[in-house]
Length: 137
Image (cartoon, rainbow, N blue to C red; front, top):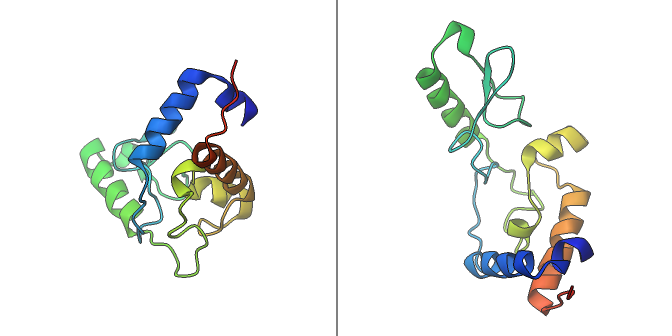
């Protein structure tokens, strides 16, 4: 965080971001990012995926077309819901941790498990932004 917040311009961007994300609605969808909604990845084998890290949802473009694949991916990513006991659900810091179910799947083998690394990063970022501590260059 020292490095990240040592740049005054980057710090101001984070402050603007924090103002825009004062209230985080509690969502029931697991993926809160643009994966499969506004972003996609196609691997070298023609597999359309919601993002470069999400391999559990794929559509084979070699046996279909992009539009069909896009709707297939979109529907499947939106069907993924968080469990009631999911620790990140409703967390006030979730906008600051780079929360990513695919990262959690790679780290723990479970999309619905909180990443300790991302959580600690988000907590530090949140504290810095809400306590007004900024490292001057």
